[in-house]
Length: 350
Image (cartoon, rainbow, N blue to C red; front, side):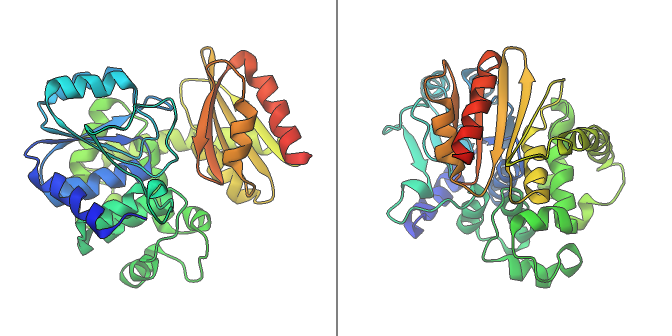
């Protein structure tokens, strides 16, 4: 876990930045992490990272375009060295906050990068980045944002009871697992709306971020008005496509491993894997999204999925993978996908 000293350092970096740039992973945890720091500082711009699995060098142009003085990378397990080099050339400070095991192929951690990760601490843990951003900023009015990030990342935080007392109609008594909260509460509905709305054109995502930076309560996100229209419309559009894919995926619920692959213009593998894990808690879930020559894969299960993923990609050219103990991601070439699938089945059934 992060120490009070580390939390104080993070807070000081935010305080001292006049124009922070927040590069955040394109999901609920990344979004909430950005919002917590941005609302605390009341300054800066957010850039949702859509490259997978790493923050690639192409995003470095944003540093120059937006004239930031400090780069914060939130909830991203890997950063291409080219991005770091461009940031260094620009003369900006660099703060990286994550909670994944460090990708060996990502940017080298050095004196330039201030790196914070509970995995790398004296008492290793893996709480979401939004959990630590909330601890660093300590704004009680942003409790609901911290809950969005934590539950969206499959983590039940210590302040869940406090949230339940403050927003009982958005919660459900007796919820024991974050995964259940995702699909059995109104808070879960809000998280799914945000996850889907993040998969929109950049102009619409920027519009949504401006709204979220000023929103006073989670109830505002459920109200249909001029400020939420685009966000809710996009979420409904994707929900229809998502439900069709989910029904197709459920037809593959035979045996120990539920393996589902699909293509198209929309990546929903993580969302599908999460709900399938909720529906089939005793199965190993593998959802592969095919785009061009690559397959982006989301894996879920009660086994050590991090170790299983590592073994499944071993020796495959340009394959990457990692994540948490029960939820991981991987990328392999399409031609290697059959090999990857066979390895997963062997690893979980042997």
